[in-house]
Length: 92
Image (cartoon, rainbow, N blue to C red; front, side, top):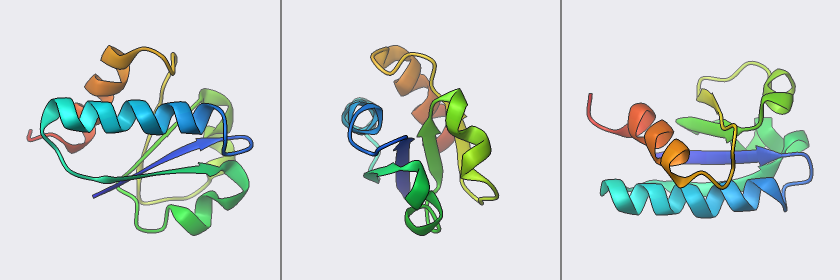
């Protein structure tokens, strides 16, 4: 499984989301690779992604993808991120 975190430059918000997504995976006992990227490279890095975590402002720029795009409102809210990862990748 693969999660891609997206922001404008690929170093700020996406890095925060990457760390918090990794914490969510650990808390849920799930395994996935997590990659932080900028919105310009989203098509290249997300071709095999299961989930893309991002802010609402970048959803349109992501374009067509097979990955589930999840908008995270608060990049520091571990509960929000864990719940999103669980819904997307956990057992249903």
